[in-house]
Structures are given as C-alpha cells and as structure tokens.
Amino acid sequence: QVQLVESGGGLVQPGGSLRLSCAASGFTFSNYAMSWYRQAPGKERELVAFVSASGTSTNYADSLEGRFTISRDNTKSRVYLQMNSLKPEDTAMYYCYFYSWARHYWGQGTQVTVSS
Image 1: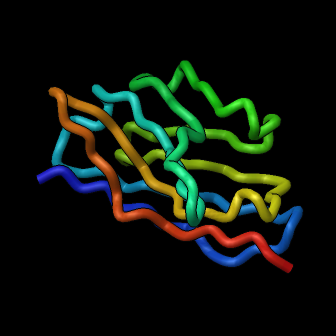
Image 2: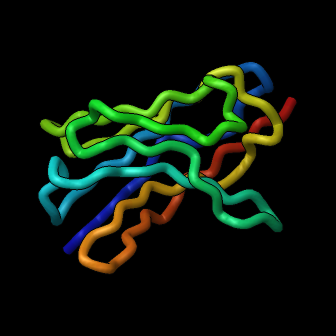
C-alpha cells in the first residue's frame, strides 16, 4: 500500500525556516520523481518544487525566488523541502506527491503557518 506521510510543519515567524519531510513507503521510491505542492485557503493547489528520481534534477515555482530547496534520500525513501526566509504568503498546507501508472498519490499534508 502506497503511503506518503509529511511532517515538519508548524508555526514560524516571518523570516524563519522550516524543513518538511515526506516519508514514502509501499513503492520503489528511487524509481519516481517526487514533488511538493501547497494549497492556501481559498486558492488552488500549486506546484512548489520537483525533484527527479535520481535527485540530480530539480525545478521550482518562479514565485519562490530561490528560498526553497528540494532534496531526497533514496536510501531512506524520503523527500525534503527546506524553506528559508519564510513569508506570510507561504502559509498553506504542504503536500508530498508523485504520479505513477495514471494515478496521483498524495500525502495527508502538513500545515505551515507564517505569522508574527
């Protein structure tokens, strides 16, 4: 059974940092590209960052301005999102995601709130 379990969210002040983690199980993690998405209240879910199966290729939403870094550890079946210089507009539920055989797999999400 495929599982994606996010952790690491919380309340942080503007300018702070958080590191999100997604623990994957039930599939051959190293074979799949992984992504982080986020959804703010009243807004559509949007792609934040993407990492290839090997971890050698990454891509980010233009709006992030280089503040976030996605990485993965295939030996631990985990994907991470390091978020720096957080802004109130980064407040959202953050989801781990991958696509396989015409199916979309999502985690349950972890809430990030940026507020003073």
